[in-house]
Image (cartoon, rainbow, N blue to C red):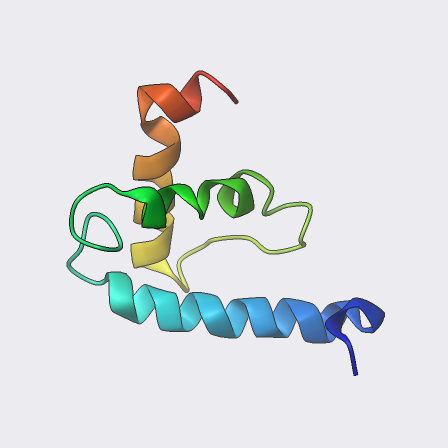
Length: 80
């Protein structure tokens, strides 16, 4: 089954990925150590999370802080 045909299943899958990412982000400011292209690739998701029906809340605190750092960067914030 494609995720596009079942929105709830797609959201569950996104939440699972965010939970894994949250564990990986613990103690890190950026995904690969220093700010890099690896971080930049997540900015579109973070800025459109409402569109995907996902909210970054207390269940993924490390991802939420990472997202806040990314969108606060002047080069990113000026485009929002």
